[in-house]
Length: 95
Ligand code: HEC
Image (cartoon, rainbow, N blue to C red):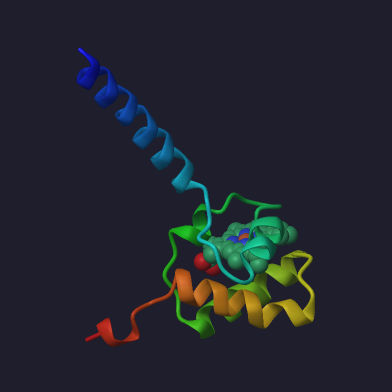
């Protein structure tokens, strides 16, 4: 009786954890900036589902600034590094 209850409880916790992880960004320098700046016009899905090289991220960010993203000049490098590290492309994986 009690083990079954514990298993059920555990499943709930796991399910809640997964639900949270989907819209959460991984920790790191620049995380808060990305969450605040980049979720103003769209959700974070186009970011978390993307895999880009640093150059490609820099290009996207320049585009977003042209769209009106309130990102300061000095924040760009940090954000590019953060995005390339967590949503980067394995450059060695390209044949
Ligand atoms: C001022 C509004 C705005 C802000 C702020 C904004 N975006 Fe966007 N973003 C857009 C619009 C509009 C599109 C869809 C049109 C397009 O693709 O250019 C888009 C699309 C995207 C895409 C998918 C298209 C692609 O080129 O891969 C990515 C990735 C993206 N944004 C990343 C970001 C990141 C990273 C930030 C934070 C630095 C950000 N956005 C902040 C307006 C914004």
